[in-house]
Length: 417
Image (tube, rainbow, N blue to C red; front, side, top):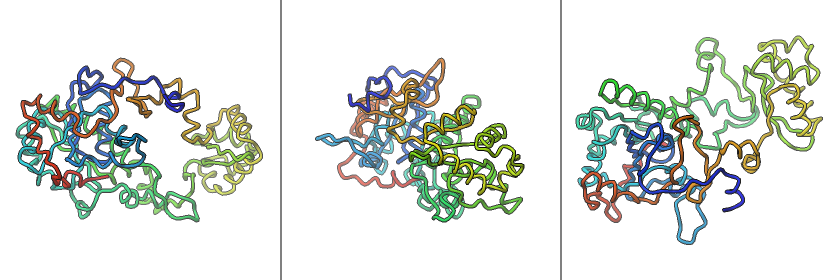
């Protein structure tokens, strides 16, 4: 085990297939035919909590298998991104553009509780998998449909990439320094958020289907998901004509708030999102008696001066001193960590924040259920590793997968990012 891996939590022994599944969702079968991050991210959350998740890929495989950093192995391997996104899922290859592959998919969906897809509107129907037909065969089936802009509207047929959602939602317009360009998030923020909302919405539909016996479709877009982190900004514009400018690390309703550089070059983050915390910080920096800063509105109106006072105070202290003094004042402060710092921190070691699965270090399961905890049974598996076993369970021969050398299944990967 590498030194970095040793910093992760206890290694989890990998295993094949779905044998011995356990967890809160162990009685659910999820078919994940989505690609890239958002849809597969929703499916990953189901797998983490014990659902049987069957990842259906085109013959060429999900592009995430080749995205980003790759293990340095002589024989080649799938990316670390895939090891994370595909964890806990059985891998099946079906060419849905062939009659055999489509028939195998239909039989699989007859046994499923949830289908997750992210094709452009109309593509699922074009593959002969229209939701009405699927629910005619399996009335309780829930179908989570993730797209860039939704199943309807003038933008529905546009390519569904998170970058476009971040630009259109207003998120990029407020991201960055006041004198700099609009910025995009440096991680797959929109996709991961959409996956989380998608998993929640699917659970709500599954809960209702248990009661009514009838499934339904869920229309979820990347733009709609990201709008839900914009807080009161839509209301502020609609009623007050307020457009938030780019404020760097700041937000209008919490001042001071941001990242500040200390005398030794270290960066710390400070938040004052409650009046009591703000008063303690103001007292510490010597501005506790300044009436301009006594209320949220006053701090907002005098943002630049107050932020300058905080930045000046921080610059007079080393990172260790600033954090100690702010901690003693019971303020909200944290060092700005790199991933190396995170791995070295004892808190995250004790919490088991990272685990090693099949030799790969990755995030552990985030929600910690007390009685039926989730787990990561295995990392993302090789392409098609479970095709034969899954088809055999359906009473089908593996040859019916429609997996033909060089088969064109591009339409299976034409969806939201």
